[in-house]
Length: 234
Image (cartoon, rainbow, N blue to C red):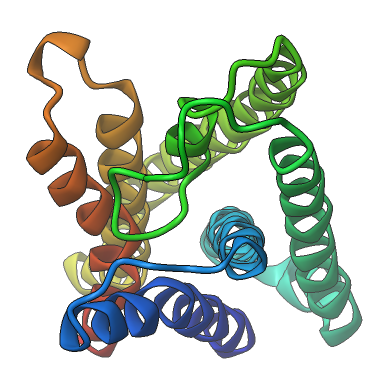
């Protein structure tokens, strides 16, 4: 559990460092500029750390499932080598996903200026500046990423259904409390991460506005990584 928490903390730290320092610099120096290379790097690292965080949260859900539903097999299923392989797979998949999206996005010509209505470089805002039909490729990549995300979400829901069924069968109240206290921090982090990201990207167009988009972007890109250490420390 602590090995995965270490990886999650690194992903949170990387996510915060990708967007917040540049935004603070622009605010202090009263500017809103970022170089083309810096924007591409920001998109890549933001997607990389965000994707790795979601993958790690999915793996941590499997860790909870095995520890509660199959405790006698925990050492076999989640040994040090298996944990290292799963963490490496999470980072590698996030890297490839971020690389594909970044390469495709920045291969598009920008025909509608270079001003983004956001405090960091975000792919939907960049695509609004493009007039190329090549953004169909980005749509295909987006569908692929959403399919993987939905698969992870279904896995998390299925795992927690099995976990809660196992916990409710524990005869002692103290045992049930201990099992729930193990799961609740992870469940809170997953709920916060998914709910803010989904609402930020799937909100109805009728309620969209620049100030609301900015607030929602802060909500899903800064708040969950900042609150994760607090949630787990409690």
